[in-house]
Amino acid sequence: MQIIIPFVLLVIVAALLWPQRRYLFARAGGLFLPSPTLGEPTVESRSVKWYDDYFTIEYIDSQTIAIGEPRYHQHNYNYLIIGEERAVLFDTGSGVRDIKPVVESLTMLPVIVSQSHLHYDHIGNHDKFDGTALPELPHLRRRLQSGTFQVSVKEHLGFVEGIEAPKLTVSEWWTPDSSIDLGGRTLTVLHIPGHTPNCIALFDREHAYLFTGDFLCPGLNVAGGIPGSNINEYLNSARRLLGLLPPETRLLTAHRDKASEPFGAPMLKYTDLVDLARGLGGIIDGTLKGKGFYIKSYLINERIQLYCVNK
Image (cartoon, rainbow, N blue to C red; front, side, top):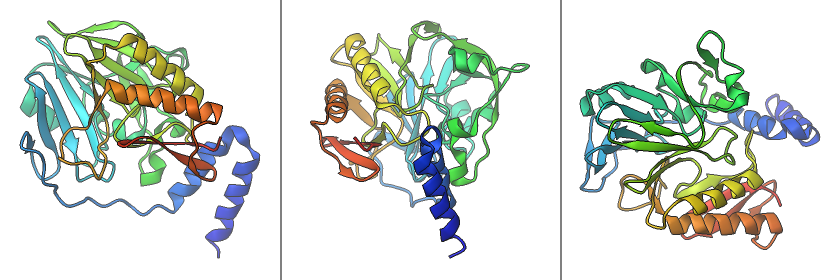
């Protein structure tokens, strides 16, 4: 009863304070989540190799490598994108294990780390590298102090697994819609708010790859109910991507559906993005019905579900 009463009070306060409601729900839920344990090693696709007993390596092509964490409960995937002069590690994972030795086994080039967004499971190994690239957004830039950036608790959400929000050493600012030259390979930085205000994707036009982060993944996706999420921005970003990307684009995503087979790096197609935009529009105008109460689950297609605040 001593535990239940504070939880009920938190829920009541959350219901009354709209600006803080999503954060308080997340915070209250984190108090009751058990510490995650590692799953058993999975039987992966033939193209996947185990680096050790935790990380997997899969070559999308000779210069694009998915580094998986299939034993971590969120099934994270991070991408090493290699040019002729340097490489980008897009997302660094949960931090359960050190990803740097994996990266060093794959390239001898200088590596800059960046992130699809600032949630704890995407920046868990940033501190193992010399510097971080952040998107050039005014609300982030003005918080820089002496070259370091303190990630806020609401941006990080690491309290759900007992992880403190870190300070990041910022070495580069990437302006939305700018090009990042890796030497013989160019990436376009796309600001795609919706899941969070800070979400970015990287677009490799030559290879028709979009590195999406959490914007769209197989399985469950979150468009509302967490701090900073906004379904209207989500729809705007999805429509913008549809206008920018060629139909042959492959979406290299940040999480794998726990039930997906064959196992390997989680990829989606342009048509899945079409379905996402249609589904978001249906949620907003009320034509797509979901299941649940405060946060509802919506079926986007046979591979994708979306969580969103009740509409």
